[in-house]
Image (cartoon, rainbow, N blue to C red):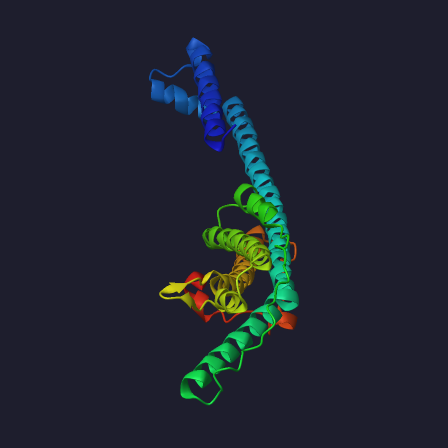
Length: 294
């Protein structure tokens, strides 16, 4: 029952009883006017006793309702803070997942490919200038090692953010590009794996294979840039997964601190993720500054 309903019912009870006592008082004792009757009853010992009793009961009910609502709100805040801490832990784990993937697979793979492309371009420029003999073949070792998309608790994070936490605009806004980045990275890795399987069974000459691997012209006006594009996408999407996960964790930390202050006495400690040990693997956050605005 709401506070307003209790107030109305209480007033109705007091009013009804008041009028009943006034009207059933002995006729001989009743003053001639209604206002005099009310005043006489209110000033009488029995009137004072009855009114005081009802007012005390009403005040007690009102106070109990206020206390009950305060306790309910406190329980809601405690439950939400627990959800916030759980979400921070999931966002932290998601960021660490992609930091680890970047360290173990992506950095080496992308950097090696970048060096190969630079060497290939230098060789091509040398042939054009005549500084490299025209019969000198560019030698390279194609990286045909497949990798697999990492598992991250993105679905669980989405469930808690949407179902167990009051709408925190920034974290929910950041959730969408994080999901898109995770799905995009999974797809890019899958496409690269498929490209590698196609490349392994090619029967064309080495010149054609090199053109496909480096995304250069293999016939007049014909270029296949799938592989270099996939390598660039994997590098960018990995960084996006890291950046958006970190921003969600930081946003939830700030939101949790606000909720802890609202709770007041004895709030739980809000998780504070620290990425200092992985700072060399965290992408430059400047391109994401638009997302960081509160």
